[in-house]
Structure formats: C-alpha cells, structure tokens
Length: 437
Image (spheres, one colour):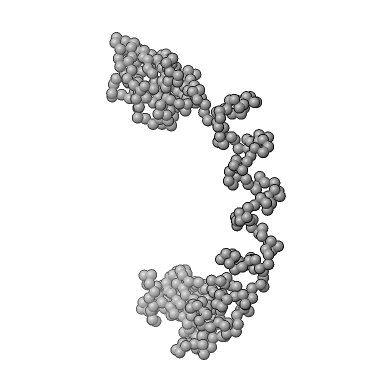
C-alpha cells in the first residue's frame, strides 16, 4: 500500500513539570493516508512506523543516517501520535544510539524521514517524501547543558572585571589545574609570601634565575653533579695542578679531541697496547713501517692484488717448484657469428659476410695482436658448439700475410663448406683467438 503524503505534523520536546531535567523524548503527531486517501477510516489500525533522522534532505547512505527507531503505532482516520525515543532499534547503522545529549541537535540541519508499513509483506515500503526539517523546538534538547556548566565553558570574556572576589571562591577551590599557564605574575604575589615549602622540586629553571643570583653560599656542599656542569665549562684554570688522577677519569673519557697533537710519546703507550682495533683504516703509511717489519705472518691470505706487486718483481726465485717461470702477456677474443654474418656474442671484433660469396666470412680484430694469435673455430649445430675438421666444415685463412693456413695479427677469414667438404655453404660458427697483447 503506497503512502502518498504526510499532511500535517507537530514536532516538539515532551515537557514535564515533575522533572527538573529535560526529557529525552520528542512528541510527534502526524496524519498519513494511502493511495485511496484513508488509513484507519472505518476502525483504528496498528502499523509499524520507522522514524529516521538524517543530516541530508535526500541522501540515504549509512553515513547520512544519524538516528533510527521503529514502533507499532495506532492510526485512527489517518492521525497518529508518538513519543520519539520510546521505539526499538532498527538494526541499521546510525551515528547516535539515542536522542539524548547535544551531539544530534548541535545546530546543523537535520531531517525527519518516516516510513509506514503498508501491511503487505511482499512490497518494500518507501519513505514518505519530502523529509521534514526539524527546527527550533527539537533543538531545545540542547537546554540540558544548562543543568551544569561544561568544562572551560565560562571564559574570561564572560566575566566583568573584579566580578569574582574572595567571597565567591570556596576555600581550596582554586587548584593548580584551574590556573592558566602564566596567569600568575609578580603583581599577584605578595612580597615575602613564597617560602621554601611553596617551591616544588626542580621548578626553578635557569631562565628564572637572575645573572649572578646563585653564588657559593647558595650551593650546598656536594650538590653539584656532572649533569649540573655544562660541557666545556671546566677549563684548565678551574683545575688545580695534579688534582686529576687516573681514578678520576672514566673509561673511554679521553679521546682524540682531548689529547693535544704530539703529546702521546712511546713511553705513554703500553707494550702491545696498540692492536688492529685501535688503528683506523689507511692510517699507517709506508713511511711509518720499518724495513722488513712486514712478513708473511702480517699479510692476510688473498689480500695481495696485482696493483700491490711492482713490475718485474716476481722472478723464478719467487715461484714454487713446478710453477711457470715464464709469463706471456695474453689476451683473448671470442665470438659467435650467425649464418647471415650477424655477430651474436663476443666483443673486440667485427664480422662481414663477403658480398657475392657463399659461406665466406671476414673477421677483423678491433685491436690487432702484437703477433699472430692462435685461432680455433667450430660450427654451430642446433645451438651447440660442434667442431668439424676439414673437409666437411670450415677452413681458416689469413686476411693479411703470406701464410695461407694461419690467421694474421689483424684477423682472418672463414670459408664454410657443406658436410661433404665440397661446396661452399652459409653456416654459423664460433671462434676463440688467443694471442700476445
């Protein structure tokens, strides 16, 4: 059964002369009809009515629902009367659990939405539109604040000068918590009225003491601790000769900044007192090491690199039995070339598939070897390196030079043949060239 209109309503706070406080109920009367223009015309009917208070005239999100309740209401010829606040929960999300307090009616716009059960469980009951804005009489619930004064509700601006005197203040009523910071100045304190008992421990700070106000007579013997002395406040002039003994110096108290340059002599360092942990990285230079002071036991395994070895300092006398006595300075170039002459892997060379020639590739080293290198090449078969011997695979020829069986220091050419070794054939290959730099 569709509701068509809410014709008239009265919304106000329920009043009671028997109570000194504002009740947490709102009196509400209304008139409602169905599509035919009547509800409870022939006899009163009971219907469930849901009352919701929103912060919007139209929005229906959970965040917009401030309060909700439902109750069974008797409707007689369309008229009904209820006390909001006596209903039961709808189970819906809402901001306030009841009508009590000042949070709900805090001066913002709020709207009452009403949904009347049409008696047909197969339909969804729609809220009557438009929602009614709740105005001044409902905001009288804020008057409950008048039963007591909120903390800090009365400010200085609300009080006339000299309005509060001794007769308005009960004994011991003014506590430290009731006095604002910096509210009590010199003019509020009678001369000589502050005694030692009135000063809490550690309440007088350096900023409250006039320069020169504290002398020897104000300091009890033995009361100055380390924390009372500013850093660098004790200078040489303050220390009598021979008054600082070893027992007066804390472990680790004397560091580099406390020792003048050049003041530590050999006599000041105990035997074996300087260990690895005391020596900073890179602080010992060659000039600080005596001749023959560093032997095998002073060198960690693996710590000597190529840059630590002077040129021509390793001779056959420095090598163990069975080790090489002649060192050849070599470099290596390796490469993988696709059948169309594209370099797949390797560096330090260029490759050209000779134009108009089947299976002929030219390799040039980017930097020539100082002498003819040793070159080994093999075919690429299904992605694997697979060498072949001639005939039936490849031959290597020099680019420059007179020897037609070896490469030159600048590069070489590769002639690829079929597996029978008879016909030129485009094939991928790999090579390694090792020679003197």
